[in-house]
View (cartoon, rainbow, N blue to C red):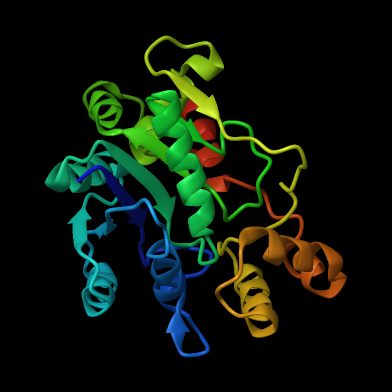
Length: 254
């Protein structure tokens, strides 16, 4: 297998428990997310990586029902969970996404995957410099780079967040361990939230799907979000990447 997508999923969110199991029009957010990924033209396989906690048995069962393999691993050492999942197939490249991004664009996955291949990079993503909407995050990592990070990363924040060690030691950020580049765009859409972290985020996704369906590209959802103040004001102002920042703050305060 050359190209494997691994999507992280868990039930234990403090802000919105069981969020990926919440339904819109009879489909769970996880199902919408997986159905969209499956439309990628380059991806060879998809895995769901969840935790060994009993409550995440529901995620495993849903993935199996949808015909998607599921790996269950550490709740806290997410890097280990992700690596052990990738190790099953040992692909050339791994695409990391998260299942709280139900409207993730499969064409964007292909763009970034193709960029990683053509540039022969260890790491290629659209989040080193954030300009895409929150909820359209795609990271492509060489399996060999993922394995190196798994062996070497020691900080708690680097174990809790799969690509932090790779990103912080990437050539794009002046590091020497991983050859990398950022998949950028001219416009800045960082104020657009197409992810689900809070109850208000779910309301936004629900409204977008009710108006547009669940099969549009990221730009269509983004333009609709920007043009409709009623929808935009529901979840604007929420901090992006709050979980990673919390990990960093905890380390700095020790």
